[in-house]
Length: 292
Image (cartoon, rainbow, N blue to C red):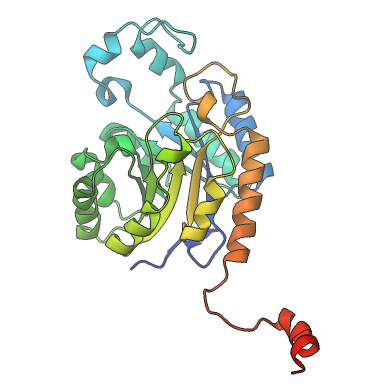
């Protein structure tokens, strides 16, 4: 089992405070000003990392989907292509945001949606990469990531054990360090669908680090995954859940992220080692009530 993933300023392990990822994704709405404000707020909340999404629009999505009408209250274009193009950040913008985040001691990384985007992200010299739940079955992309010898986080929403097996097989073939995220790909996810016990299932089956990527509305559930030995927690992050855009409503605002970070860290401290012993703090009471 890989017991830890070492980054420049962070260590991801079950023995360290949880690695908290503020998933900015597309919630910058195509505006650098908003992207930087989100990075600022993630820093203030005590997050460990900020994550974006990177896509070559013409190769990441089917042409039929790109050409389809996409006029709705959360759309930034008449077609799905126009909508996605509006939200996509350029390589230069990503480089600027990476520099901005790293000055605040935040890990900056992104999810490549296709190999062309992966090639561009490699030029940014990222410490870690993410394979989204959408791409668990895109084994060409998985293999391209695995070959880079960069630690990778794999989300497992809407995936079967058999599908996860195939990803793990590829990652281990190339000796790639990886962390699996239990995830439920419903937006927003209902508490009764979260199946947090699957975190234990994944740890026992793959013998690897396991985290949690959540899409529920509440900020109160994700911190509890620390008690299942989740070493990383990822939540979508926004300035305002009422903003225009498809992901804002299932995201945490700064107040929610602040709650998540504080509670996750508190529960990590409270979790302890599992060994049943007499604590030093109990000795006074033990002497008083037992006489020894």
